Amino acid sequence: MKKYLLTGLLGVFILAGISYAQTTGVPTPAKTTFAKLYPHAKSLKWDKEDGGYEASFTEKGKAMSLLFDTKGQLKETETDIAVTELPATVRDYVAKQMPGKQIKEASIIVDAAGVKKYEAEVGGKDLLFSVDGKLLH
Image 1 (spheres, rainbow, N blue to C red):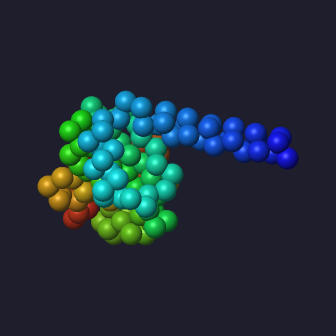
Image 2 (cartoon, rainbow, N blue to C red):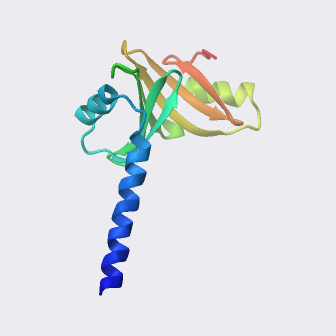
């Protein structure tokens, strides 16, 4: 019985350490803003990205990521979508300009000003498109 109790406690401490390590270095304002926006998020992971901090997680079965600055201001959200949810103009562009290549993943990105973009991963590269399906870069 003691063996199981000790094993269980060790597991709790390891998980707590992993959780702490993932948030070490993340500014408190970013963590606070995230917690207010998504209090029920699952599988939260923090990474440093583009001079800010990215929180990757799942919410209601969808993979998402949020990018915060050091002051906790939300810079953009990215939500995974099905490839079929991309505008037809995006799918047509890939089919015509990149024959034989498939869109592996898709997402919608919304910046702090509310401007939407679509992202399509094709051939290991992320392509960005405007909402009307024009290639941005």
